[in-house]
Amino acid sequence: MLAEAIAGNEAEFGRKLTERAREIGLAKSVFTNSNGLPDPGEQVTTRELALLARHIILNYPDFYKLFGEKEFTWNNIRQQNRNPLLAMLAGADGLKTGFTKEAGYGLVGSAVQENLRLIVVINGAKTAKERADDAKKLLEWGFHNFEKRVLFAQGVTLGNAKVFGGADGHVPLQATGPVTIMVPKAGGERLIARIVYQGPVPAPVKEGQRIGNIKVWRNNQVVLEQPLHAAAPIEKGNISQRALDAVSELVIALFRAGAQKL
Image 1 (cartoon, rainbow, N blue to C red):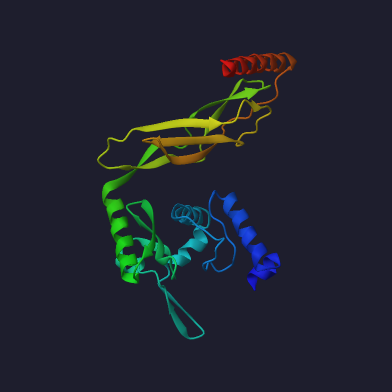
Image 2: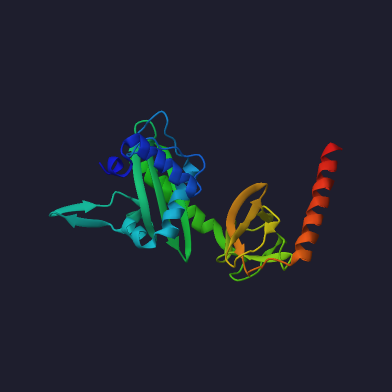
């Protein structure tokens, strides 16, 4: 009923769900119905279930706390939370269990211990007990073996992006908060951080304007991607500055075209 009220029919609602999934960074998930039951055209990856959980936790804190309610009573009927982690692990506060014959027993869970939050996704378990035990073991292993490390503190300029046609040739870039990453407590992993953006960025540039991302690689795998924004405004430059930038870009473009022919 809700799907039909929102989108007219269930198929269109599924399309809207998929569209929204792309907006929040779920690149592979496809939805075709409103209930999540098996359908040949529907798919959701384990990784993207974790990304969805993270999105809910970060963007809807007032609603997320409802996942941690162990029970509630409505119409004189006591309803208990079906998430087994709430009773099995200290700091567990979400999220949801699931089961279909095709996918088996699944669970998306999260817990906080010593100011560190972890998310676990289980799918394909044979029984509800196996699902609960595996989720608990994974979270305990994560809390015991990993720690959160700050790579860049809040307010620190991470680098600069080249500006085209501006009063200044570069704009400083900052993240909206601290840039943190999970690393093994034993250490020894090699991390590489790079600023990725499409440039040069045309002036004017507004303070707070999103410019690109900071990407962090661990052993050739991207493990963190966080937006970067302009830390200061850049006004349009005068005619001489804009002309100089135009000539510079033309020379660079010619050089690249020549290099590609070699």
